[in-house]
Length: 196
Ligand SMILES: C[S@@+](CC[C@H](N)C(=O)[O-])C[C@H]1O[C@@H](n2cnc3c(N)ncnc32)[C@H](O)[C@@H]1O
Image (cartoon, rainbow, N blue to C red; front, top):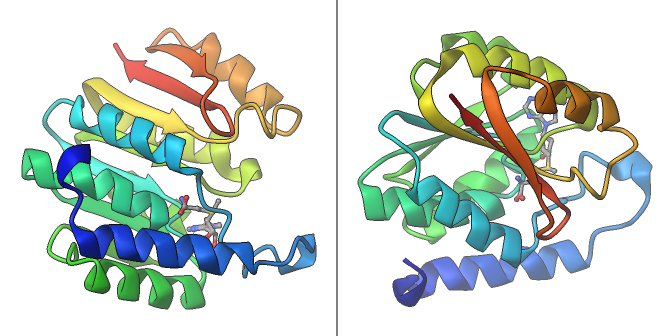
């Protein structure tokens, strides 16, 4: 997987990171900023996705498609598809360009709009990357979890970087008897959850 990343995928990853370096830190521009995962989280995501059982792969929070490119490496290796959800029109356009330029638009489907209107329809989820506004984590988790296959893997980002905002979510996930979970201190800190 990592030894054969296509040049066009690497080139687009670099472009997106360059775009991000020009992002403003102004929180009022939150929906314009890309807020992409760091590359080490991308490596982790690809490894976890490649270890997921059979079923659907989804991503909640596409942005420009950076994390989706990492997950697409696992999808390519396994012969699976990825469905990714994004509400901001400008980001849907950017991610569409990302997946086309990187040559993974045969693997990745973007669903525009509010993910909360889509999650009930997702069945047999084997892998989920949760990387959306922090106040939506619980609602998304609650909607996805009953639709996950046994052994399915969910990764939630920013567990350490946004520990305050996500404290209640973390408490509930860690005491959820439907899953086993642990914090992995990579990048911004992810919660790795496995449906029992
Ligand atoms: C942290 S960014 C995702 C970054 C991306 N995973 C990456 O690493 O490249 C969160 C994204 O969730 C999107 N978002 C926020 N609320 C949403 C909603 N209700 N439905 C779908 N997408 C939403 C935002 O527009 C933003 O692009």
